Length: 408
Ligand code: GAL
Image (cartoon, rainbow, N blue to C red; front, side, top):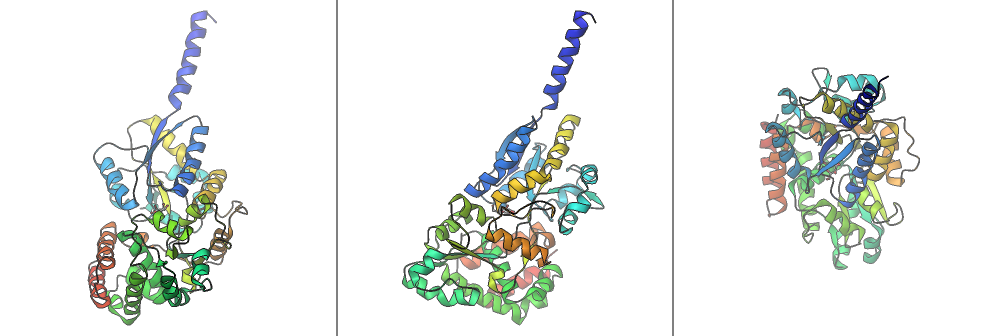
């Protein structure tokens, strides 16, 4: 081979490998201590493939991040990959043809066989095509209790919501906040959903959230939930924090008795070095019924007219479901893996409890899977108003029922 030919071949090889290393901007709203520790696992795994993770963290909650993410995609400034909650949030983007079809990756990796429960994959599927890679199961159905706070108040750590409510005056006497609650509609609505399942029961919840039955929303079971929400509002009257992780911090530091929050809270206890069962207790279903909703996070990939980026997006999607990444990410995040065939023996007590409930089939769908983004926003706005005013249980219930009446 002549020297020039050799050189040309070498240059071609160098540029081929340089070109195949793609910088992928990844947007997400994982900015608390626990969340940042978890998303770092994805970044490390991606960088280890020779590609580059360009971090696109958006501070605040999903409610802040989602409109930014969606307007970038609609406005022609797409990121390489983005977190959203799997469910109905991406529906319109998919219909507009703006999100990459991942069906070939899903088939190659056998997602239909490994993803458990299958509803996670259904939530990524439209007209038989798969548009997202689910990465975890996150459930709202938990309350997190501070051992320190209950010890200071001289009462046993409650085993259920009624005991918690009964202990609230003692916590107040000890100058503690019974219930930590961030002042944001999505947190208040999440807690309301958990209280609904515990107090009104799953059947009533299904009638309202799945069937959009406004009569059920006006009925006695829901009236009891709104009454309990008034009590919870009183318990949280001195909880002057905004972000969910600030509220979790009140539990971690023993300033508050408990917080109703999804199991991403677990990441915060972990970063703070707290041990489940010793420093804090987690009760699924408010200690009333052992159930998990199967919401969670998924990654979507905006369509880009560049075969190299598209190949990298598919490589990224496959990486997210690889057994190693499923284990490292979910252990840090406090969420459950989307595949049942990975070894989570290193999980803490609360995650083990979650895994047991999942294995026993104690699952329900999430609100995100059933209500449109528009309906969710209307409900969250109502909750924000309810929690920051003295709106009566009856007024809140009627306003809630009229949202359900026109919900889609
Ligand atoms: C949820 C998301 C979780 C968690 C939480 C708080 O929407 O599914 O992963 O991060 O927001 O930021």
